[in-house]
Image (tube, rainbow, N blue to C red; front, side, top):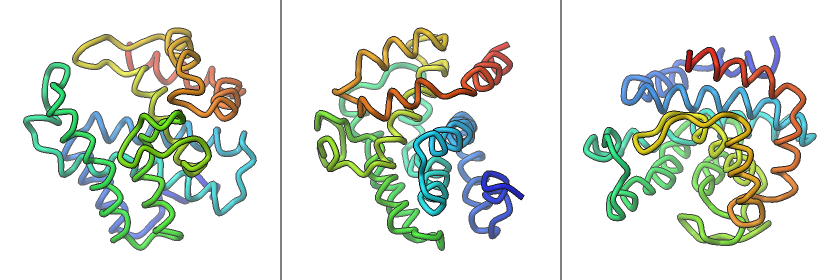
Length: 205
């Protein structure tokens, strides 16, 4: 059993929480599952030690778990969110942190911290704490890249799904502002990006 497969052989409490997210919002569940796949390749490309690779994969799996607590009026909103609605949506990072801290995960406090900070921006313009640069934990900076890429490839209420080259163009424009430039370079050079591209094409077709 490899490291990725081992995530799916965990205690029922973990599988139950994943199923809870699937029942709550299938699109968010599927997003998290894709981010785990991307995270597996990204972590190996970054040369993460074994324990940090596990932390990255769990963080990817549960980075949006806080959306369980977002009201339907916002989570299921069919259009772009108004500013006050976005503020409520942004609470999912701290709600997710609180949920993960209650789970019996290896290095759970660290994973909870990464979940809290996966929407921080490299230039300090993110949330919830406005951290800047390397003050943002590295795994949280990696999650930001993974989350952004998959979100750009998804259909959203205010736009259609973007093609790979379109997503890359946007992310490159955000290098040094939203994203860590060095980590972004590694992500965009992943050797098996073609494999992920096929998954997106299959899903959209």
